[in-house]
Amino acid sequence: MFFWSHSKQTRKLLFVLIGISVTIGLIPSLFANPDPSDGDIYYIDTVGQNRPRPQQRPHPDLHVPSVPVKQDVTAFTNWSTDKTAYPYIQTTINFVEGHLSFKAFLSDGTEVSYSTRGEHVRYSKCYGDLCIIVSQKNLLGVSNSSTEWEKGHIFGEERYQVAMGHKAALVTSERKLYVYNSYTNHWDTISLEQESLRAFANLHDKVAIITTRRILVMDLPTEMQFEQNLLLRGISQFEMRDGFINFYSGDKLWMFRHQTEAFEEVDLTD
Image (tube, rainbow, N blue to C red):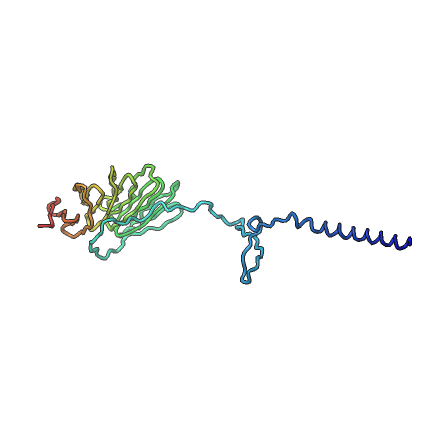
């Protein structure tokens, strides 16, 4: 009787010890994080089972920018339709970017250098007879008729649009137009007051500029400018030719004649 009682107590003690061991083994799982979005990243495989995938981290030697770089210099697109039949244009000037410098090579073989030390080049292009550079501090232009890079100063503008012609180039901000003249190697500055640019074109020695308020025609060799007020009308399309430039606005046409250097108003309903 004593042996049976002792065996029974032994069996009870054994059951208690087994229960304690099982409980201790389950404690870590009670504090585990069931949320797959916190910690490991889970994905669904082809058989529909969740499997943990370690989170990808960039290599410490790789530079990953935290903010995407903004493109602050873009190509300008005309709002008014340009019907000009442009001839084939050959680029007769080019430049090479060196260490903190740009070297322009003119059509006669002349080399013209510019140091970019202390400047960040944001845009550069050659087309026709000229090259331009836009940095955070300056506008630069060089042409086949120049002996040095011509500097045009900019004042605090952050975003620009650029339009290239074979004899002239345009850099425009919200407040100003900067026109590079390859004949005179000079930058002209035109203020935009309560108006915005709508079109830019260059054929031979003439430049046409259309804004919401006026038309400007520039003669590049003489640097003369001719202006026509649009009288609150918009130009739908224009066309540059060797002897004249036509600007169409509904039933009205403004024709600029190169010979007379004047605008003529034509009523198309007659």
